[in-house]
Amino acid sequence: MNVIIHDLSTKESETLFTGLKSETKLISNNGQIKNCIGCFGCWIKTPGKCILKDNYEKMGEILSLADKVIIISRCCYGGYSPFVKNVLDRSISYLLPYFKIKQNETHHRQRYKKDLLLSVYFYGKNISKKEAEIAESLVKANSINFYVSKYNVSFLDSSEELYNIAEIQ
Image (cartoon, rainbow, N blue to C red; front, side, top):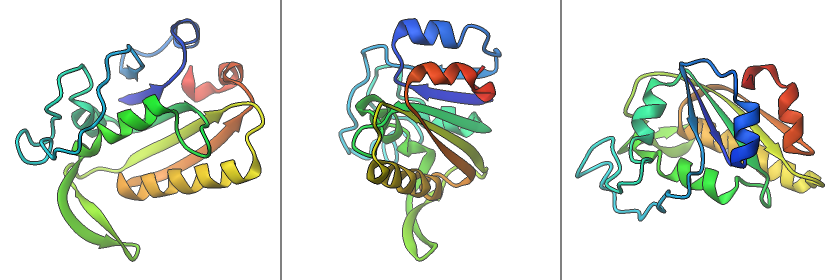
């Protein structure tokens, strides 16, 4: 299954994703997402599932079923848009609360024994070289954290350029 996490408007989403395969899960902003409160409930009280009820509580489980994750986000100071960042925060239940050393850094252990593929598309006018460098570093760090076996990062001037990318269609 592919998972697409995006911050596009409803109109853009409806136009871009009209021919999606049924095995693709679309995660978009319905205006209901709550912020992660750092309570560790997804690790202790309800393992693998967030305690906040807002249709995003199963993000860890959704990632566990994914083979590939595609993120489409406006580039915000070298990072994800607030919505996409929030979805990733709410996905921490994909991992276990226990730690291990990986690439000389401390990281959480895997809850689900699988490797993900990740494609990230940042869009926005005038993304500076420094913002692009920061964004690439962020995606690399996320890839280590989420046990991504292969990732790529692309920068687009506008969301309209997404219509030319085959893996999104």
